[in-house]
Length: 203
Image 1: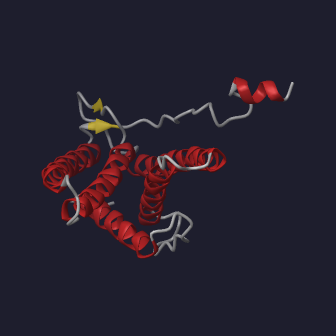
Image 2 (image 1 turned 180 degrees about the vertical axis):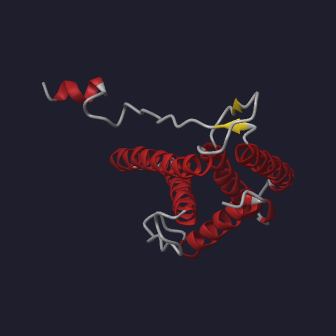
């Protein structure tokens, strides 16, 4: 894995996924992944597609006139989407771990506060924020266009800073200055054997 400007590579994939989604702008649109599903690029693309769909589901559920049954259906879909998103992040981290686990640790090597994939997860969300803030900043009838332009600029700076931090983390892992561990999220609310509301139903 070439760690040089890997964040830029991720951002290009994310921007492409967002662009493809908005050709139909439909939460039920089929994701056509241009890369193999289990490859790094394929996982990155699918991860952002899920984020993009969920972004729009979050918009839909906030419609004040939504029917309660439809709101519940969307909420359940968002829950499932969150689980799929988490699973994909863990798959990405498994690839990173395989890449760097054999690197000899330098004296004083330390853990990072988050794994590479969770940092890249934030980069994916930033790509969505930038896209949609730009739309609002350029919308002619928006009373908040100027405020959105200012936020758009800040988000762009934030992506630059996060990208730098991601590339530095990958460089540190490659050099042995940092090392990573794999910790599964261990979510409980979706598991019928661990959520007390769910397992109580089976008694």
